[in-house]
Image 1 (cartoon, one colour):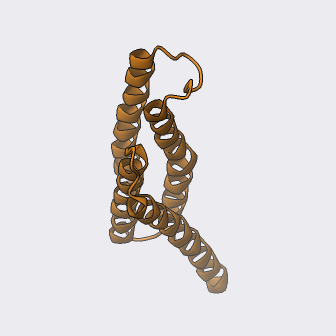
Image 2 (cartoon, rainbow, N blue to C red):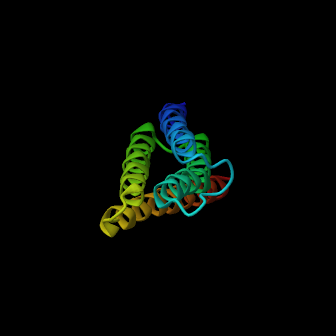
Length: 131
């Protein structure tokens, strides 16, 4: 299972982001929300955005792989997802946000989701035609 490798790598990244939020919560002594602390707010959003997009992208990658997409394509999707998530996270966590990193990260993430979904549909339809 090639997707499992990327799920594991992204899980490690998620844990790092979690510790960054916890560290900022301790620094600013904020248990809930951000209390107006922009560095904490940005850390929370980096973490939250990751939690919103990465699992669904990984699920689509897994389903594409399970449907028969070749490992090479899964690796391409996985690398793109990792680069996209790193780019987005780096951009958003900056106080003077370089918007290009955020946009590039989301473009890669959406591309992985779109290409995985298309692959699933194509592979499914090709099986129907072989019946």
